[in-house]
Image 1 (cartoon, rainbow, N blue to C red):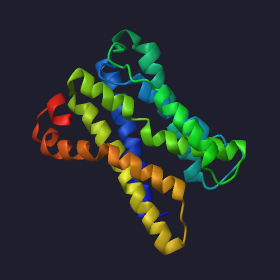
Image 2 (tube, helix red, strand yellow):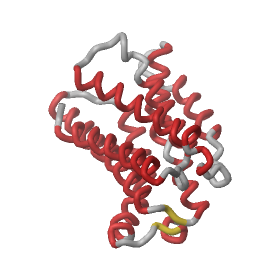
Image 3 (cartoon, helix red, strand yellow):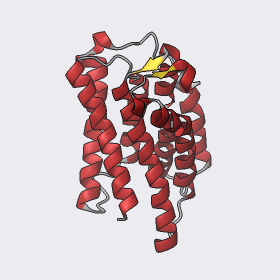
Image 4 (cartoon, one colour):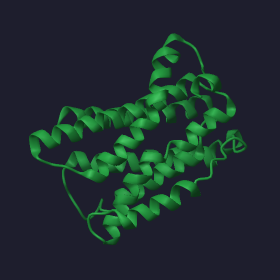
Length: 214
């Protein structure tokens, strides 16, 4: 394992913990897209179906369990524990516009036409766009809480670090995964404007507003 992958995993974990703590401490999931969180739970579910059949390392197994548990805990808090605070009126992104093309691509572009491989490919493509309902919700409501922007920044940083991980693995291990790299680039591009606004606005104590985001 290289430093970029480790840093990426830590950033990913920190992002989810930030979100969970925000919901738990405020007793509210206002401003959080439940649809994005369901998509992320679906990503981990379809990616880690090999949890009990393939062993790579203790670290790998633990991280799979942690991400699965935290993603479903987040969905539970949004749709069950604090459902009265869920802003369903503004969480209106049509997720079928993501799921249909992702499913199609998973069948067309994969390394092996087997159920497990297709589901793994589906998880990679879906992760690249799963944040879109959250970004759409921000543009619709007009602003985002600072804690939500910290979550988004850590999530975007995770994907950016993973791009460096792929570069490292290519040069030092001869490993090249075109599907993961393309999906990672797409996901990082989605965060580019947000990264700029985070540094120039959020870190200076200003809220992320609709005009800035657009």
